[in-house]
Image 1 (cartoon, rainbow, N blue to C red):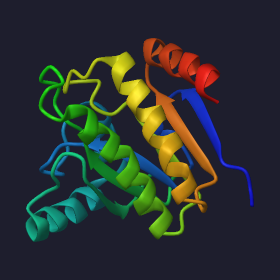
Image 2: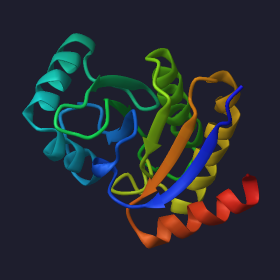
Image 3: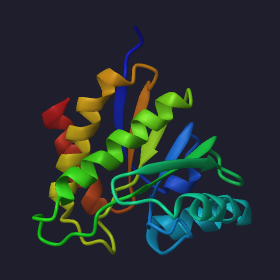
Image 4: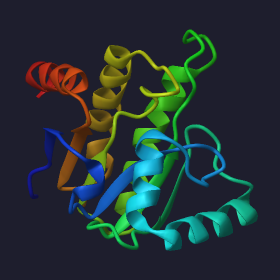
Length: 176
């Protein structure tokens, strides 16, 4: 069996050439700010058109779930859109929903035959999830799910800023 790796990089997820990049989407799937807006801008209008079709058919995407689309003008093959929870103090199921974002994205990538997947720091922007807690949940969910997705060879945590990069690097040293 081939080795599965987890990497942490500082960079722009829209420029990554992984099989799939994960979009920290909102429930409408119709674009927004932060990572979501950057991915939609870089992918071009085809992504928005496909997301509109999914939203019309499914009524959007609830927190903790994931859907997959084409990548259009991006360097990756597919975009997995997952909706992270808005932080409300942690007593409204936020940890479980955030973990589900990572798990469902990995399972979806596996079902599509993808081997590499890149995650942003889901829910830590406008959804205000505390960065350290979100990173711990992300690592835990990925490490626990990897045995179920043997086709996934490479998981990349893409951090847009140095603060998140430092948090993820520290966790990687202690977990892997």
